[in-house]
Image (cartoon, rainbow, N blue to C red; front, side):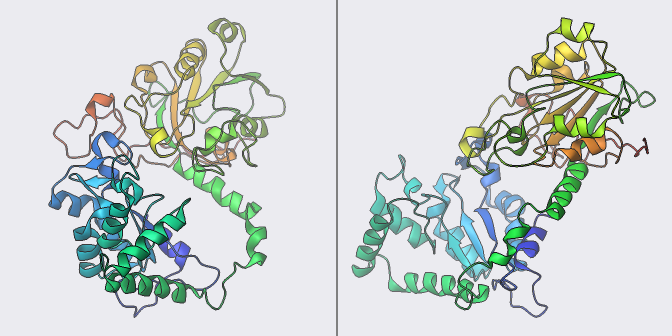
Amino acid sequence: MMTEIITGLQGGLPVHSKKGVPFVAGKNKVAACAKHYVGDGGTTKGINENNTVISWNGLFSIHMPAYFNSIAKGVATIMTSYSSWNGKKMHANHDLVTDFLKNKLKFRGFVISDWQGLDRITSPPHANYSYSVEAGVGAGVDMVMVPYNFTEFIDDLTYQVKNNIIPMSRIDDAVKRILRVKFVMGLFENPMADNSLVNQLGSQEHRELAREAVRKSLVLLKNGESADKPLLPLPKKATKILVAGTHADNLGYQCGGWTITWQGLGGNDLTTGTNILQAVKNTVDSSTQVVYSENPDAGFVKSGEFSYAIVVVGEPPYAETYGDSLNLTISEPGPMTIYNVCGSVKCVVVVISGRPVVVQPFVSSVDALVAAWLPGTEGQGVADVLFGDYGFTGKLARTWFKTVDQLPMNVGDPHYDPLFPFGFGLTTKPTHQN
C-alpha cells in the first residue's frame, strides 16, 4: 500500500514507460523520494542511524522490496540512509548505491544524500570531510544535502574532480540524472510553484479527508471485560463525564514530530485543528456535562459521580534520535492517571503514540483501550468513533509486544507471543444516536 503514495505525489505512470525512468505528471504533481536506502528500519535495537546486521538474503527479502516497487512506479529520487549495513555506511556503499540500485535495478532518477549525510560517513561527523566527499560521491550519491557550509563542499568536490580523484564520468552521471528529473518535472518551463493552489492548504475538504483517515486508522484493542459487555460506543447522553490525561487537551501531542517544526511542539498553538477534548465536547449531548482534569487524584474521581471517563495519554512528540527509546513507556504521569481514573469509574484509555508502547501492566484495569497513533489535527475523528457515529474498523499494522524484552518480535518468530498480534483489531457497529 505504501507505494501508492508515489502515484499520489507524482501521478500514475504511463502504460508503456521504461523501467526505472522517473515520472512526474505535470505542475500539480511533485517528485517523490523513496527513503532511506536501505535497511533503515532494521537497525540494532531500532536506534536511529545505527547498524543493520543482516545477511544479503535478509536485506534483499525484507528491506529491498519497497524499493523495487518504488522504482516500478517511476519514483524520481531515492535518499540514502544514515545507517550502516553490516558496519558499512550506506552513504559510502558503492555496491548497493551504484552497482545494485543504479545498474541492476535500472533506477534512472537521482540519489540524494540525507541532511549532512556525507559528514556522518566518519565518526565523529565531519572528522575528515574530503574523505567523506570522495567516499559519498564515489559511492554514487548524485545530489548532496549540505544545509550550512556549502562552499566547503563545492571547494572540496571541485579540487577532487580537477585532480582526478573523482572521475568526470561520475559527475556526468550525477548531472544527467538531476537534469533528467528536472526535465520530467517541467521545471524549465514552470520553475515556480503555482500559487493558485495555495488556498487548498488546510481546506475543509482536506480536513474532512484527514478526519476520515483518523476514524479508519484507530485500532480498538479492548472493549469491556467480555464481548457481551462492551463499553464502546459511549452514550452521548450522560449526566456528567470526565476527560483526563496529558494528551486530551493538546493538539501538538496529537500531531507528533515533523509537524511545522522538526521535533513538533506541545500545546495548542502549533497549528489549527481540533484536539480530543474539544472533539468530545462537540459530540456529546448538550445536556451532558464534560469535566476536564489533566491528572485528577483518585478521591476527585470517586466523589465526582461520573457516568464514565475518557483518558488520553501517550508519548510526547519526537523525531529521529530524540525518539530512540529502550523502554517504550507512556510518559508520566500517564500511567498514574490511568490508575487513578480507571480504578474508580468505567473508562476508555486512548493512547497517542508513534508506535506500540508498554500497556500490559494496566490492560486489566481499563474497560476499553484504543490505539489512536498520531491522529494529527483532526481529533474529531477520534470522537466520531468513540461515540458510535462510525464503527471501529482498524487493524494493527504491526505486532504489539507484552514487554520490551521480547523485541524484536515478528510474525513467524519461534518466540512470537504478543499482547495483540499483527492484524488484530476489534470492531464496533455505528449506533445512530441522537
